Length: 388
Image 1: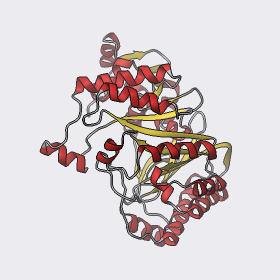
Image 2 (image 1 turned 90 degrees about the vertical axis):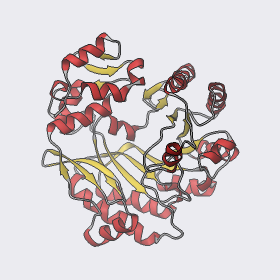
Image 3 (image 1 turned 180 degrees about the vertical axis):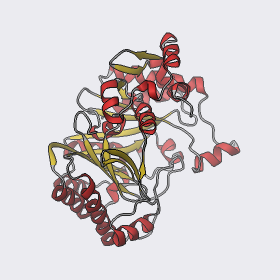
Image 4 (image 1 turned 180 degrees about the horizontal axis):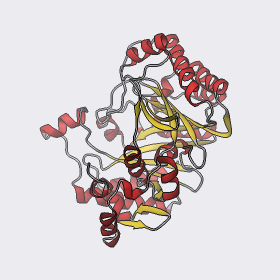
């Protein structure tokens, strides 16, 4: 069950940050010191382990995520890329992305990453307002963020940056102004995320106490709609719920996730989806960085036991990922990847109801959410997916 477009990616998780942002629920950790040599060796061991299972697949993308992978030593990134090149066939147009924070960017280091093979960066700007950056726990200023974008533009062929909207105290006018300013620095891709309060974060604790407020649901809809209007007019329409790009500039790696392709997850807490003996398996590494490192060095990998997914589980995952795309779910590819039809995991009568209500579009080729459907996508999915 290889993806119709034969896309396979490798995700490499760098779990360390300078500080923990209060809204972040990712597997990120703050350490005074990191045994760089040991972690580099652990990445190599785990890559070699997954190569034994997937090296028949040509690699179309590598994504260094985190955490803050721009804190990674350049020679570690270089060795990881070299190991991948030794163990897999590499597509000529491979996309190799590095996530970066403005505080960890230096021109010389970016040039080192470029020399190692990285050809795309994604910068965590989050806001162009210094007070809001401080409230978000960010270590950089708006000016530093814009300088980082300029550096990325000079060094790399492709770059993107992230912003968070619907922040505490933010007005629609504030967001319009901020987004217009950001577009002056944008190239082909921008990620725009609505602030959500995730359990286990410092923001969740403050929200529960009543010390943090975010826009009400109706106001959040206004933020979303304005975002779509501004980005569409700028030639960067949404191609996924939170991602905007010019045609051809979409994140190839993330498209693997949304199209339910195969990918190997490397590093502490990394997830993957790979086929073994014709069956899709979910992989998940231990979250603790040092636990993962020691297991990888000792056993060749730091993963929990793999989970074989049945057709229904695969179908549900593919449906939930595919409907995030504005282009929707390609039903032919859905069947090729999962071995089941949408009707095996979703109630056709409920789909028809939402089509009649203008929330979904369905024909023999695609199933997709309308702009109105995108606004309540979680509710749409909960409604149509068949209960056990």
